[in-house]
Figure (cartoon, rainbow, N blue to C red):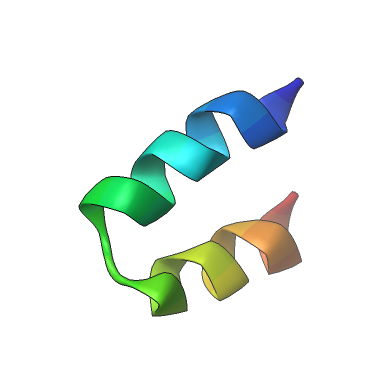
Amino acid sequence: MVANWVLALTRQFDPFMFVMVMGVG
């Protein structure tokens, strides 16, 4: 699922990115 790479991004990027990605996907 997309959550897999999403979690990896949140680890590298800031939590704000997580919200942005969640909104997109």
